[in-house]
Image (cartoon, rainbow, N blue to C red; front, side, top):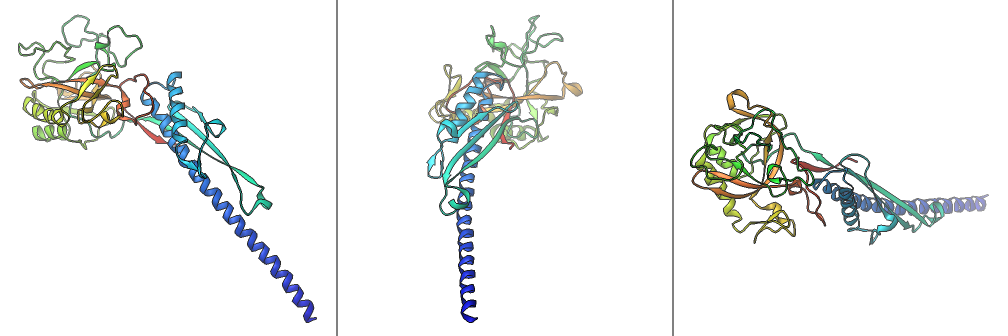
Length: 370
């Protein structure tokens, strides 16, 4: 009786030991699979965000832009190691476009198992996916400079002022015959005018884009007057601006604060020049080739208003219709007129391996949605 009991205990002990070893083996391999999936997820996140950055350069509906997004997504998804090696482009990374402004990246890796082959087989295929979106930013935008200009328009009657019925240009159509009247890459515009268009001191040959003689494009973000206006030019304003907001205009032409504030930005990147071939600024400190030009203090963004929407409250405020990026080219010190060149929205995205066509003046940001 005692001998038989000892045999049963031994069988139970062996069975329990095998079960424990099986659970331990399964735990090790399951943990390994979770690690691989985490690495895959990191790759798909990076790939999706990089792919969506192409939509800073142009329209989602443009096949060339989607091709650029595909290239970027695959390149970034294949940079990090998954289970000791990087993902191969063939079969392991796929890119799709499930919705407007979105990129989906799927990745898979077939991994060998160590201890649980008897339960799960010799290998398992691990998968992950991410969806990223180039979202339009239209709420609580910060870091804007305190200048607000209208969309360009066709000055049909030649009076240098906007008149009802004149055509407003809100983008840069392909093959536009006169890009100086559109927000096309490199278009020179007045960001802050110092004197009325009809003043004898106004020697600029550029279209003034001035809707009313007494409106000088200076904005009063927080009611702090000339000092706050100058600080908003020199630094990163924390004043939140959303589409549809009514922003107060600064009274007067604000020549002194404009000259000092804009001069500070120019002095911070004194060698910056416009590279016409790249349609980007570059200099000794910030370069067009490596994307560092985005960090130049002379690269700014400002709110835009629609000239068809009249300035409200007796010309004391403007309604925000969009946002646009510019490089400050120069300032005319005797009158405080600031000249800039339009930069498409890749100015505010991340640099990719190749440039794409220009987009309209819409501010976007990247985010993961799945």
